[in-house]
Image 1 (cartoon, rainbow, N blue to C red):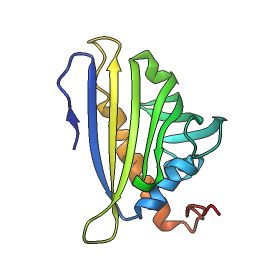
Image 2: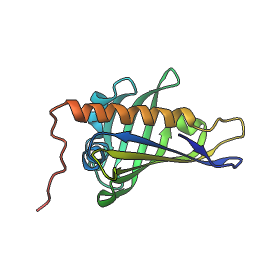
Image 3: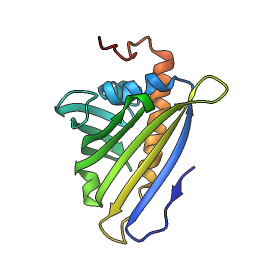
Image 4: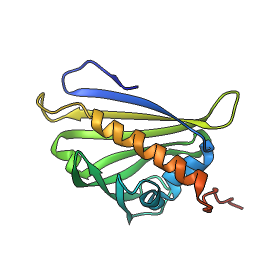
Amino acid sequence: MAKTEASSLVGKLEAEVEIKSSAGKFHHMVSGKPHHITKAAPGHIQGCELHEGEWGKVGTVVIWNYFHDGEAKVAKERIEALEPEKNLITFRVLEGDMTKEYKSITFTIQVTPKQGGPGSIVHWLLEYEKISEEVAHPETLLQLCVEMSKGIDEYLLTEEVEIAPSVAF
């Protein structure tokens, strides 16, 4: 599932998650309605608030309250890239618990329709630079992302929620 790039402080981890939801719905929830993730994955995400900007726009700053490694944690992240036509979004961590161990860390999520059938593939890419050799690679953060993806998928499949992207005229 996870691949680690061999390097001292700089690294990359990736994972793919098969989901039953459409790529567009999943991407729209993560990019345009991330505050709904608290309902979809309450064991992992306890809060998501808009700190600066607008939901679903590059430059927007979001504060996440999440549960990781047995502890409640906080992350302040900025949307660095957003490509709706590719169902891609990148978040860069600005402040919070992750910055105690990583000089930089980004999360890129791209969702693609599954070939030859229903459903999609969620591809997670974590790129990071550790503050020291003693810091572990963020495999447990990647696992949190995988589990959160499964929760979002279940939520999209079971809830009658308005998650469809809005059409701009």
